[in-house]
Structure formats: C-alpha cells, structure tokens
Image 1 (cartoon, rainbow, N blue to C red):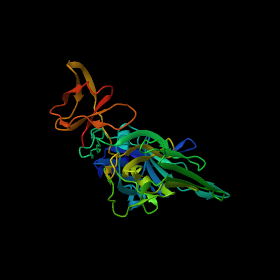
Image 2 (image 1 turned 135 degrees about the vertical axis):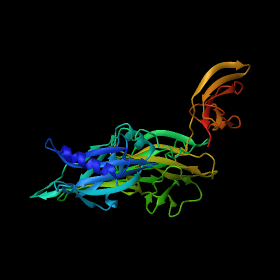
Image 3 (image 1 turned 45 degrees about the vertical axis):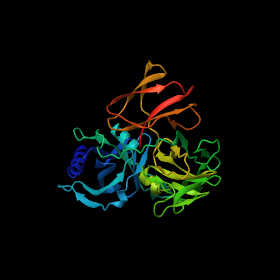
Image 4 (image 1 turned 120 degrees about the vertical axis):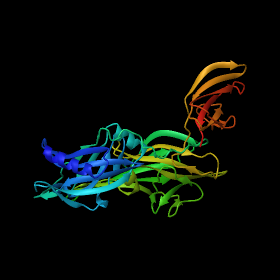
Length: 402
C-alpha cells in the first residue's frame, strides 16, 4: 500500500508544480484502505488540483476542501476522468484535474497545515438497510522547497474604504426555523436582515434530510439576487446603482443562499456559496436621504456546520457605491509624547508611496469617522505626524487610503 501511495503521488506530482500533496485513505473498523493521491498548486488566487482515485472509490457524491474555519467545494465532477493503469497492472486509477477559487483565510489555513481534502462516497443497499461508507480523505502536506509557504505575488489587494461603517462579528445561520439571527447593517439599532435556516426530514428508506439556508429582507431593504438566490460575489465587486448583468435588487422574504442533503450519501453545500465557500452579498438600504449600499461577508464553516456571517459594511453617503470587502484598514500608531505646544507627535508604520488618512471622532463607539486633514503620502516605512490637541475630547486614527 505504501509503494502504491508513493507511486500515485509521484505520478500526479510529475504533471504539475505541486505545492501540496496528499495521500487519500478511508478508515473503517480501524482499518485504513488506500484510495489514491493528489497534488495541489497555488496560482494567483486559485488552487489547481490533480487527483488520482482508485476505481473502487469512483462512486462519490461530492468533494470538498476543509480547513479550520472554511470549506470549499472541489469540482471533481467538472473534470473528465481518465483511466491511469499502473505499469505492472496491479493498480488502476481515475484521474481528475481542475481548479477552484481560493480566499485569503482558506489559503492561510492551508499554509498553516489545516487543509484536508474530503471525498463523500455514495451509500448502498444491504438487505433491509442502507450502508453509509466513511469519507475518503487526506491532509494537504507542503512540498519542501516548492514555495508552498510563499504568499502569491499577484494575489489581489483587499479594497480599502475611508468612509464605510464596518463591523466584524460572527453571526451563524440557525439550523431551525424556530430561531433566527439578525444583522443591523447601518448601526441604527434596528435589524435590517434576518438569517434563517431549516431542516426538513423525510421518513423514507433511506431517510432523507435537506438543510436550507436563506436571508429575509426586513422593512424595505433589498438584496442583490441572481434569480431567486443571493448573488455570492468575490471581493472587489462594485455594489451600487449600476448592477452587474443578470443580477437584480429584490426585497425578498426568501432569498436562498445554499443547501445540503443527507440520504444514502452526503451532498455538500450547493450553489455559488458551496462553490466559493466565502463571498459577499450586496445590500441596499433606502433611508430618508436616499439609497445606501453595503455588503455582508458570508462563509461556510465546518465548526458551525453551515453558513456564517463574519462581517458587514455600510456606506454612510447616499448613492455612493461600495466595493465588496472594502473597509477601513487602520495602521499601528505609537505616541511619541507632546512634541510642541498643542501637538502630540505619533509614529506610524507605513508603506512608501501609499496614501493615508488622519481621522477623528468624539465617541469611540458611536458616530462616523471624519477626515481631520487632507490625506498624506508616506515617504518611508516609518512616518510621523503631529496631532492637534485643540479639538477637545476625542479619538484619532490613521487608515490606509483607497
């Protein structure tokens, strides 16, 4: 078995610049059965894969990459399997190849050693009962000297916002319609969206369960939909008056997000949420001064077994678009004491050539940050500014510019 595992891993690794490899196995009754091997390569913000799977494990209902806090569907079904016989005829495999989009958290957790590839096999009927096989899986192991721990040089930069109201908080979708969680996007104390979930069980042979998750617009708020489902967008998409092709604003009471099912097999989460594992949903909030735009960040979490809202942002200026994922990025500020009359000198960790904004507000928890002066451009990795002490009681921060 060990020789077969090494053979398969060498085979898939030879066709790609592997950053990670994994040995696939299935454990049943304390016995481990070899199932194949895989190689994974990071290219920009995508993970390319080559999987060789033993033919005995070819009947599967889905595959996924799990990390500590994320999960993403691995589209094996999109590839065309080809037979890969061993030279001596002792081993045959099915070869799959493809790619899927990564997000920053998933990549960091894979690099930290928390990546685990899982294959869900179909069950079978055994006399008067259904047998559900254990999952097939393997840990992603970094290939020494392959650059697996390097951050991709062409990884897209997270968008910045100097005006957005931003909240980072975990709010899971409930698994029962008897409960719900809400999100207050603009911080006015009133819920703007409701997070819903429901488990529907069918008493049949085999038993069948469907987990549904959706969002409900409260008041006259709207979500950006693709058909009757929430449009799950990647980072950096514009949310505003102009909508992307095939997307529409809707005050839906049942905006579907994703679902999964259990019967004789497990079907992983479907739709764009399952495919991406992490994304953004556009929100429009009509207020007295006009329409305001924002986003909520949603991801699939193995810990919560279902989707979770991780953060949200709101643009306080009406009619102003916001990029998905755009938020303020504060920089580290260290006080150098009073430098001259009426000024407090501060040292900043900056990046040469990047713009920064000095902002002020009187209450640390309430209200919006306002630019105190014009933006400045850093000329080195350490910058200093003098903060006036004359406005009275309040708080300063320095954030990165757009």
